[in-house]
Image 1 (tube, rainbow, N blue to C red):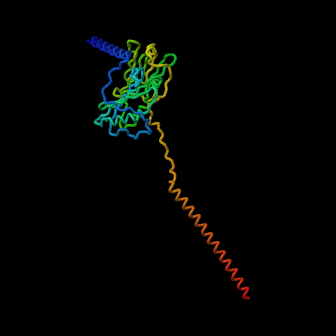
Image 2: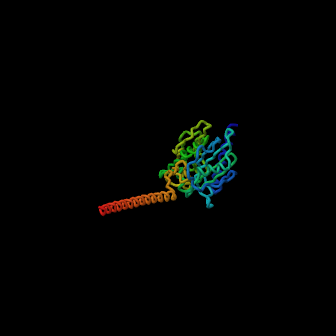
Length: 315
């Protein structure tokens, strides 16, 4: 019975691999989950979010880095790196994540645009799902490949940790990093599962998974989490190119936005005019007083001369 059960699991896994690889090779994706698509954020976020984000919610976050063949907005099929981020609300009788709140999360944490990059947003029950697809050279935000054929794969854990920390009560409870067409793979940072060198129809597939409910500590830095050697299928199926890691071209990290310092207020034009008029009036008053004083002095001088002249005549 044990052998039969094991054989059944092996056969099931092989069938799943055949279906997945067959779908990828002909350009047909696995049926997408049914949810409510939301508008994708296109206007860059202008300021850091007010914290805590979504007060009253207890949120679990699942992150997955997964190479996948996707239909792009221009209708072509290309190999991409899919950065999946799922916010699960409603834990411990807390509030669910509404469509409006899901839209807010997308606009805040996954805004901006870049070449070879697009986003899908979906509200599905208590879940808010973000899928960011990186094509072409933008894929190097997640993997590096040197001339010797060594591959390193990472996830943007520094940014994802910042996102989790901005909530009132949220944590990254699951992280998974996948890669195909590599062999001799190994995981770093002690995952719960290190599923390595699984054979596919062409090449191999590996993934590393961390789950906090299994006692794992989810990584919080951008250090490589999965490594291996690129196979020929990686190049034959145009799954990537040789190149080093690069910074993520998008989204914009709202936590790095520096607030614009307030500028000193300039006096209003009316106040300036009144001040000028007052100064002019004061100057005019001073001039008038000087003129009056000078005239009085001349009159006194003339009177003194007249009196002196009159006395002389009398004498």
